[in-house]
Image (cartoon, rainbow, N blue to C red; front, side):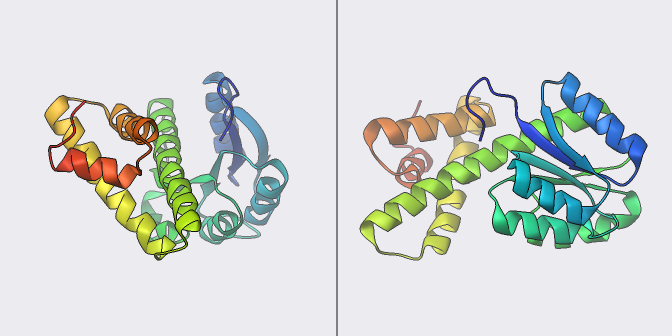
Length: 206
């Protein structure tokens, strides 16, 4: 992810020029850095390889390669947040898109008031997931035990449960709740899943 103070880098792939222009203008006006844009799915994959953005916005239906296949190629190669744009008639493709690594979707036509919160949300959720995954990978590599894939899933689940507890019992917003878990883990040199278990059990409170 970008260093603090550095704009979030975005690649846009949308075959309708007017929608692509709207996306670009909205994102730039909100402080994002649009580093690449295209009307084709295959070119989107190439642009991500070249620019290594933080976020990719893909239309579902594009020439060259559809958004689902492009998302699968992109997430296989890079750790990047992926959002897809879909029409109402394409809602049946959402499940397939999720399996391809898509973190969120937005239904067209959309408004600025819908796009920007959705972008902020998907970036925040992906950053949390990556932080958990990196911790698990580092810990399991050091101990050389356990199934890393299963460990990631288990850690994500208990952290989600702990976030819910902090939000319900202490009125925290989701980013604040995750920050408390992550910060406590770093300060106590514990794993996030162990901190999360203590939160869920009521042994640890902010």
